[in-house]
Length: 292
Image 1 (cartoon, helix red, strand yellow):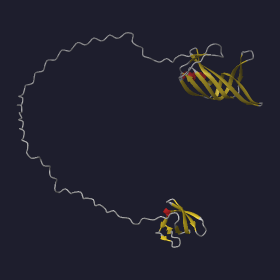
Image 2 (image 1 turned 60 degrees about the vertical axis):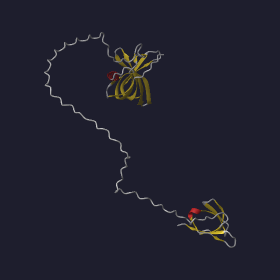
Image 3 (image 1 turned 30 degrees about the vertical axis):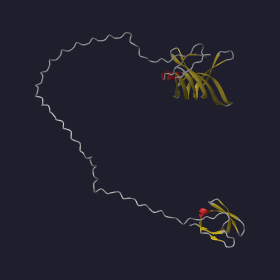
Image 4 (image 1 turned 90 degrees about the vertical axis):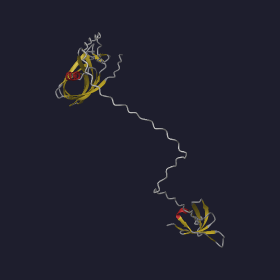
């Protein structure tokens, strides 16, 4: 077996015009697209088809179908045969007849396309060369040539340097003007240090001063709420007289006096009035109303 890997792949779509001859017209179109190796697949409707197959003795047998047939499957390959592009197409054809659907298959020797679509996968870095008998071909890989610049056989000799041009006559020197007299500066004698330190510059009298913020006196709060706790008695605006059986600081559980049913309410939803002392039990008694 001969296995060749291809990495230069192109995909081509070929649509045959009505009446074009295959596979000859297909080979001509692929050669114009520079597709010299690859595989083919397609479908279509053909007329005047000549099929080739192999008989029982191994001889090549051909048959001709004059009526239109549908090609439900067409496969094939592209190869080089001599200097030209050669195409082999193998098809499965079906045709409705008085006896039902007839199916034939073989190699398409010649046919006329009524409508034909071929999808070609061109292998640009592989050369497929058809040789041997009419039913086989062998493939041999060859690298796709790359156009490179040919190096020069000999280095060109450097051109002789041009003769130097005669030097121009020197221009007359411009008349000299009297240079300005140099300017002499006398350094200033150092000043004696002052016996008194330099006073800081006084701030302008008209600049406004920032006001001193007033300190707000701390307000003493004497309205600290007293929350009911476990064991206290309450008068709930909806449940009536109840006793607190548990409290977690946010929610309390109440037991109604009239039917001993247990209720759970949130303290944040209630307005709590200052407690009084129940004279009968000595327990604190709170009044719970709805918070508006």
